[in-house]
Amino acid sequence: MAPRAVTAGGTAGGAAGDPAGVTARVSVGARAADVQAVVLTGGRGSRLGGAAKAELDLGDGPLIARLLDALGAAGIADAVVVGPPPSHVPDSVRVRVTREDPPFGGPAAAVQAAMPLVEAPWVLLLACDLPRAADVVRLLLDRWGDASGTAGDGVVLVDGEQHPQWLAGIYAREPLAQALRSAASAATLGGRRGVRMGDVVGQLELAPVTDAAGVSRDVDTPDDLAWWRAAREQRGTTSGRTTVEHSGKAGRVPAGALGDWLAELQGLLGIEDRIDVDTVLDVARDVAHGVARPAAPLSTFALGLAVGRSAAAGVPVEEELERLAALVQRRALEHAGTDDDAGTPMPEQAATEQAATEQGTA
Image 1 (tube, rainbow, N blue to C red):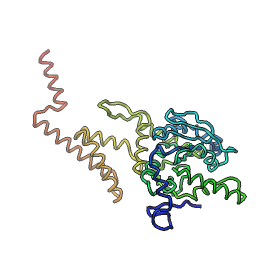
Image 2: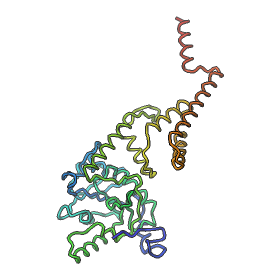
Image 3: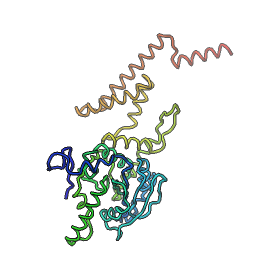
Image 4: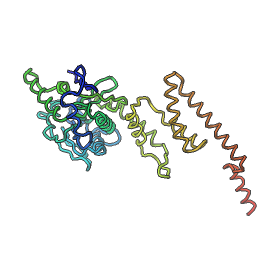
């Protein structure tokens, strides 16, 4: 059963206007303080050879540690973990642990086990195997806040193949609890064992949140694990050798920091295309040296607009880069000529004059 999508005018296929209670439910306040997290960590990990997915380390700490840190950073101070106790709990988040009975009963059973511990009006429901948990949390909170008055019973991420990710969403507590009870009753009457998550969310009015950057990609299989580790390694290689300037001092970006920032930025802006970090940094460097430092960010911004326009027209990106390089070179030569005409020594000229002066005073 598909969830009932929410539109600005009401539910899909329904009458225009505000469905009864929709605005009332969402108007409790689109703030992180109104949200409590429920994190599911109790899966079997059978496709990963029985590995505890929450404790998988892709190179920067266990997934559950990064997820809980992301909650604290987003201002969510309370979480219920359904499954084994996490190996790391940040000081900024109160974590309580529970378990579905019997264990391995599935996501719906896990959520049902967590509900008695949920006190906030909104539930941020997350799987534990999200390497980009910080981006998922931020994207959901941003869209949930933006959707105030139209989110109905919540918001849920929808991936690039239009598959809703039920374990990456924000749900109104009371409608979710009611849907769980209703689905459990239906399962009992139908002689089915257990409740399916699809039967629960199918009763809710959920606003889709497009996951254009793929931040909800999880770790289900050995191939997923290899892909994420390779991606982390590539990002670390790029950012580990990059020098930046901040607060007037030059320093190296910590390994992975530039890649993490780029991933966050792409997720925020909905950019799926790969960004050639080295090329962009080379352009910024050349402009800063050949024209002026303030021209560097302006030039990379303008280049991005031009590349987008050219891509739509089928023009190779290389042509835009060549045009910019030619302009930078011409402007650098013009500056050099102006400095010579004004009698201002260029670096090479200044060095020669300094050497001659030193010889004369020796």
